[in-house]
Image (cartoon, rainbow, N blue to C red; front, top):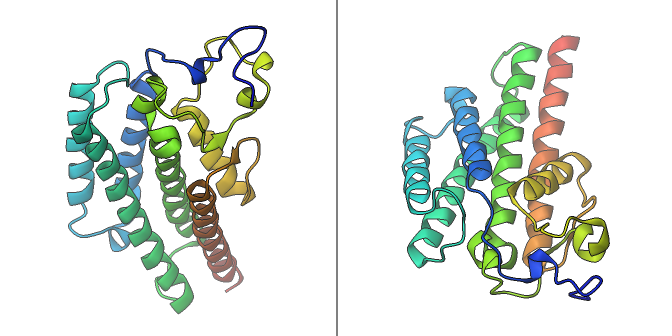
Length: 227
């Protein structure tokens, strides 16, 4: 892959000031809101515990890097991964309980309520995997800002055809969220291609969780309407 376009080194292949913190912070806040919208019977008990831990970690991360994510630290790295791990655990917990109820025919909820509950869990899953992709691609956001790792885990169109991108373009959280959303809806990569094995496995897992959630909720909702 060429590192230059017209003699210019693309931003994603050189040291930059790092992406803004605000985008991923808003995504985590949205994640917290969605976790509170998940019915208590599908939330890990006590329901406030995991969101409270996630909020505390977010505060620590924002205090350390409030504006630009470019400071590399083992402590901050662990905090970021712990936040995503807690969110992943809560999401898998909800998906497992929802799937059990749907298969067992438990919970006589209206169809609209079933779709709302399933939609909240599905969207939570999209944000969680967007965070995983963002945290691990080329070592994470701070490592990408410092250009510490050369080989990307996700190949975005702007990387393959740098002439079509702005001179300062580099992948940010919104790009990874888009990858996660399209993977969860199409059950396959769309514009960004996974290159590393972990990226392929992560996309497979997200597609599987999304497929199970959507299929079971729709099937149950149709059954309720038909009954």
